[in-house]
Every structure is written in C-alpha cells, then in structure tokens.
Length: 126
Image (tube, rainbow, N blue to C red; front, side):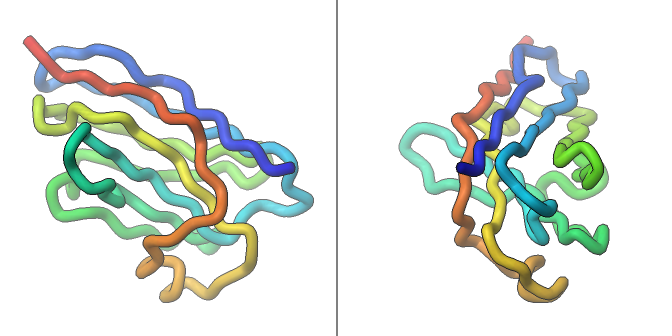
C-alpha cells in the first residue's frame, strides 16, 4: 500500500520561507510523476508544481520564481521550497503521486493522480 506523508507546514510571516516534504512509502520504484497541490476552503484544488522522474518541472504562474519543486528518488521524497511567501499562499498543501509510468510531457500536463497525502497547513500572516 502506497502512503504519502507531508510535513513542514506551519505559520510564517509574509516574505518568509517554508520547506515542505512528502515521504513516499510502499513503492517498489519511485513514482514517475509527483506533484504538489493546494486548496483553500470553498475553492477548487490548484496544482502548484509538478515534477517528472527525469527532473522536468512545471509551476503555476503565481508561484514561478518563488517556489521550487525537487525530489530525491533514492529517498522516495519530494520537496517544495517556498520563498517570498504571501498571504495568498495560505492553504492546505497536498502531495500527490502517480501509480504508473508516464512520459515527461504527459506528467507536466497531469491533474489526476492516484495517491494523495493527508495535507499540511501553510499559513502566511503578519
């Protein structure tokens, strides 16, 4: 059974930084495609960043230049480094992973994932 466990959320002032981690277990090999999503109550879930096993990445426009997604395949762990945080970044952040292999371009356009973590809250407020 695949499990994804997020950590690293918390409260921070505007302009601050946080680093989220997503530890995956139960895989025989690393997932080919993983992503970070976020959701605010009453709004649709938004894909923040996605990363393919090749290292290719994509970001939603509002976080480009501020957030960096990365992964350590040997540790089956994905990260989201969030810098210059703004109050609009406040949300529950979820990691997601795919159970089957996909190519880079399919991964970068993907919105539907098989496995989800329980979420970690990020609050940006002065």
